[in-house]
Amino acid sequence: MSHRARSHAPEPRRLALLGAGVMGEALLAGLLRSGQPADLVTVNDRHAPRAQQIVDEYGVHAATAPDAVADADTVVLAVKPQDMEALLGQISGRLRPGALVVSIAAGITNAYLEARLPDGTAVARVMPNTPALVDRGMSAISPGTHCTEDDLAEAARLLEGCGKVVTLAEKHMDAVTAISGSGPAYIFYVVEAMIEAGVLLGLPRATSTELVVQTVVGAATMLQETGEHPTVLREQVSSPGGTTMAAVRQLDDHKVRAALMTAIEAAAQRSAQLAQG
Image (cartoon, rainbow, N blue to C red; front, side, top):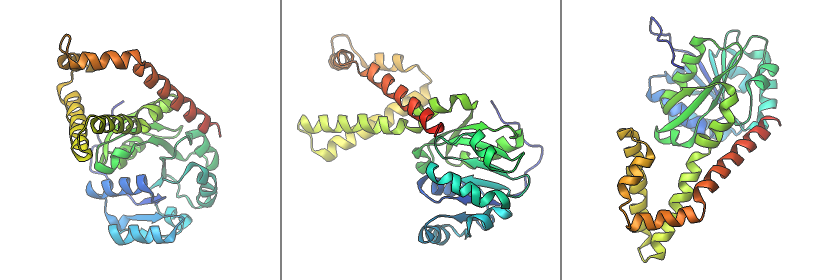
């Protein structure tokens, strides 16, 4: 689903960021790099020293959660799922009419948010991932009942400073969580194993790490820039009777492909369980 371009440049929006953890800070940094005025951003965090750290580093304001949302056009909920209900109770009565509420908390549904915020509040559920920290994130947005095209465009703007954005129906969010939300961990897991294999084969750990990391970066770049199916790219490396085929044979014998698919299914099932509370 694509976002319709607005016919005029939108006025800068006042933003409240509730929760200044790793993902909250990544979104804030990306927004500021893409032109969001720092003086229109107010942050809140349960830990006052953390909020002050963000203020000192980025030049934004800090306030209590209710005060932060009182004048905000957009409110980003970046707290842990277990802290969400208490936070919504604090801000519901202070939320400005017409404000957009964007949640990046795993397992928190749009219906959950809408039930705890004033009737008619526009909400959007987002699943980002940690490569947002290096502006290579992948985020998915699911609009709530009252979320308009302009609201979706604003939600996308929040995320585009940190990477790519897609819009999907909420029924797909468990799959998104399992694929891209948790996905970086699967890659890191494989990278760990490859580095250890290099050490086992006698390489210095630093050398093995450099070889593996650059290989992963190069392979990902090939996938992105060539547009070729991964099977085609794999076959280009797999000479008949060669070293790659010997390795792939072992991966197939150990059912690595099936294990990955089963693992991702388990992640999606866990995401659904979290959403049910």
